Length: 398
Ligand SMILES: Nc1ncnc2[nH]cnc12
Image (cartoon, rainbow, N blue to C red; front, top):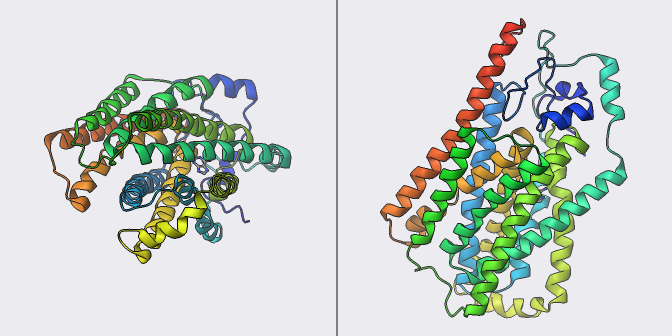
């Protein structure tokens, strides 16, 4: 598969010794001609191409998550019942991404005045010799794939037994779990703007619990409700862990900022997870009921297939956005965007399922946007500080 140049391939040539990386936390990022001990998020300068990518990935997360969750709810509401199938559909659509390996991405022109771009052939060959071994890549993808599988199955159980509002509420705890893992595993720094953003996002999604329960699954026993609750909490924790591990793997093992690296980080774990789901589907005997399920689906057979195909595409779009944001920004930023998206689901439910619009939903949305802006403002501050530092050492401030 072609490792197409996606970001700034030349920047990757700059080696930062491990002990320095550990100190700077988020700092595989090839920074460091300018020592930037104060940058809170990343010490890499952000150009307009970076902002465009981040905006695009954020759009992928928001749209993929909303459509995927709504179609997942529709599947269960209209007669779908297979947790293994729902999980498989969520991750098994990865072959669609294979086409992206062939997209030519713009190569950054080599700017000899840019101190962040390393053109020294010796440094380039040093970077090549740091390429991860096949064994470590296999270990990374197998481990991440197993976590993806556990996570996908737990989410499937949660969505089956919980009302979508309660489900979304519990899902927002993934941000708290991710903040915890990011602190310990990624040495994430917490500034007042970031803390403000996290608090607002958590309050915003907490408001979702006050929604009407018109969408509750019917006839769920207290035991199954409790099971749905516990599974969703565990899913949120494992998702927070997954994103933090993605970040570590990118920065310590993969050490490449290419579209190919993003795709590999999705395709191989998804392949592992899909194999586990297929084994689960057959091992659990759920596959035996699929024939009847498709016959009895309330919207008809064609809609059944379209529903599952739509879910598969939506979740791939979401995953592309999520993993892209982990590489370009951080796992915490990526997770924040998906929590910003949680109040969007009830708003769409107003449009598509005829749910009632109320003040709580609007309030949740406003708080989510405020939280998001607060986080992005931190990026702006870091960028401005870096520009000033670069200008003071004679860089072009780009
Ligand atoms: N590495 C990964 N991180 C998050 N979600 C994924 N889905 C498939 N692979 C993934």
